[in-house]
Amino acid sequence: MVSNPDYDLCIIGGGINGAGIARDAAGRGLSVLLVEAGDLASATSSASTKLIHGGLRYLEYFEFGLVRESLCERKILLQAAPHMVRVMEFVLPHDEGQRPVWMIRLGLFLYDHLAGRKKLAGSKAIDLKAHEYGKVLDDKYAKGFVYSDCQTNDARLVVLNALDAQERGAEILTHTACTKLRCDGDHWNISLRDLAAGQEWDVRASMVINAAGPWVRGVLEASDLVHGDGLPNVRLVKGSHIVVPRRYDGAQAYIIQQKDKRIVFVIPYEDDFTLIGTTEEDFEGDPIGAQISQDEVEYLCAAYNDAFRGQVTPGDIVCSYSGVRPLFDDGKENATSSSRGYKLYRHKDMQAPMISVFGGKLTTYRHLAEEAVSKILKMAGKPGAAWSAPHSLPGGDIDDYAEFISEQKARYPWIPKELLRRYGRAYGTRMARFLDGANSLDDLGAHYGDGIYEAEVVYLVRYEWAREVEDILWRRSKLGLHVSPKTIKNLSQALATLTEEVKSDDAKLAGD
Image (cartoon, rainbow, N blue to C red; front, top):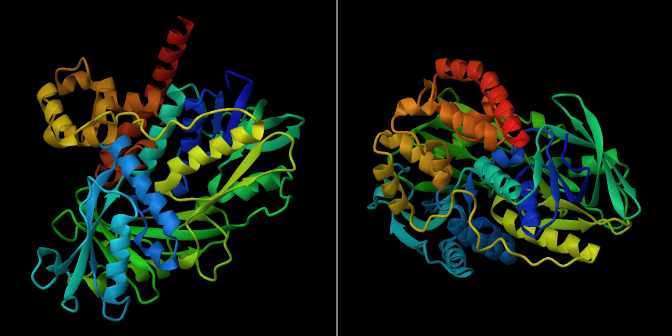
């Protein structure tokens, strides 16, 4: 249940766009409610290629504005979350049968100059026969190019935005579905259902933003709101990835051109693994049930095997994941050329302001959120200046990450190096929330195995909406790739008790 029955703004959807909008709106002083039917980032926003990038290949489709916006946002996110957004070199081997050298050189020149770069090196050509980056590649490659982009943890980026929104006054409800929207004069009546407890209740909001991703039209259909001039369609496109044991040394990623004009990324992942993806195919059905197909497995294995010396087989796959991207349907014939831009649709036929979000991509979520909040405030005739660009995300108040980690080593000399590194990357300065006051590993409470201690789990339950083991091992982290079945069992057995203890403690604090 909510603590307030009346809000300025209700946001439907707890993916990256919804969380970003909640943060932006709360920062402008609005009373905000965000509702998500599952866990935060439980669908598309945890199934990306984990990149903050300009989208080099979008230049081929003349989407210069989208690329420039993405590159500007890349710069902002590097400053806002230096613990979470990391610079990575990408190697683009040149295939004589694909795009010509002049086109690649021109694309990289534009990529370097569409947005200013201070922390990222410019692109360059390399001799793959002589350069160390060419050692793992097939002999057919002689020339290549290197450029810089960024890697992140997509699901944690969602959580950090939700956390910042909450600390600015927003209310975040997970496992809570919006079942009906009804416009009643100058406000909205919104029916909600707690999917865990089965409780139902209504709230009011002056404004609504529908950021339900693949379900954006479903929300409208459930409330008979699929009308109005120019209401866009959503093109559902499934993207799948495979994870295999690490295939090569080095921190560089590779971007491999395919004969069908797609590209496949091969990326160092979670220290011990290599991430290969993504596919692109039109999707029908319930997005929550999207799974990789055998054709996609074969496509990704073939893409790797055609470019690298070593071979990958389906038997090497440690895990896979699939997500359905809700692309704005621009009428293009194939999914590869469909725009990754977004459209903010204003429901002009409603007296109370409402916007539905169609499309978008991980990298540009902050700009989308800023534009969406500014637009709906304009519809409502209210002021509200943009603010988020210069402000760090929770844990990101770090000037120099290497210096920060060095300081943490001195502050917590008893924490093993790899564990401290993981804490730093996941929580940044927020690691102090569960480490301060501890002087040994024993002070962190029960050890469930593989470096997972009670203090961290309690933090995730209390502050980051973690309820299930999967929330902790696959969305708040990627520890699911590293931990043993015994650790999973220990964590599972402890989680219910810890959750109840956190609820009890929080209730006592609220009573005081």
